[in-house]
Amino acid sequence: MKLSSLSFSDNESIPDRYAFGKIDPQSHVALAENFNPQFSWDDVPEGTRSFVLICHDPDVPSKPDDVNQEGRVVPADLPRVDFFHWVLIDLPADKRDIQEGDFSSGITPRGKGGPLAPGDARQGINDYTSWFAADRDMSGDYFGYDGPCPPWNDALPHRYVFTLYALDVPRLDVQGNFGGNDVLKALQGHVLAQASITGIYTLNPELAPKQIGDTSA
Image 1: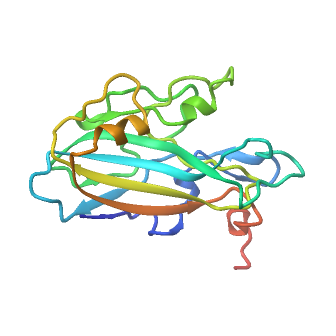
Image 2: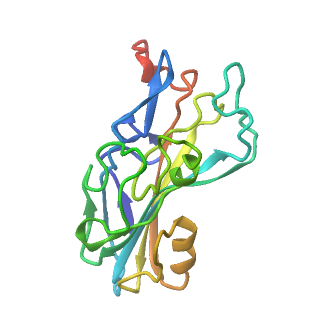
């Protein structure tokens, strides 16, 4: 099975159109357009009855001490943990693409609704749910896609891994406010094939000067 995107190339930068946050020279970070990227796939194995698409960032700092703190840097060698940005399940077996903006076209304070999603699919909560849990203005259940917003002082560019799974069941056995780990557990033993594409994103201007208007390169 092959997964590709017109929105970005494998192991190349993700445009800020698909991010939750973008570089701002004055305030470090501004809200971005938060469109879900476009994807298409082929070479689907025989017997496929549904698809699952998961996006996760494996480069999230394991300790928050230095995150977004003036005069400090999140060191590149700090141990990292996973952060789920999109958990999309029960995509029909005859589906072969997702268009830009089909599932997300902006930021919704307190999160987009779910788990029901377009095309009879379902979406789980992403990890902005826990990230904003203590924020009085933003707390809520964040279903569906919300894009990259890594620490603006992180010395490590973050990877965003989109993985498509072809399953032998039409509907995955998860209920309620399920998340990425719930889905990864439920799909065990049902995966016929999988394919991934990885995008890179940073809000550190020292690592991404072109994102804040540098036209010299």
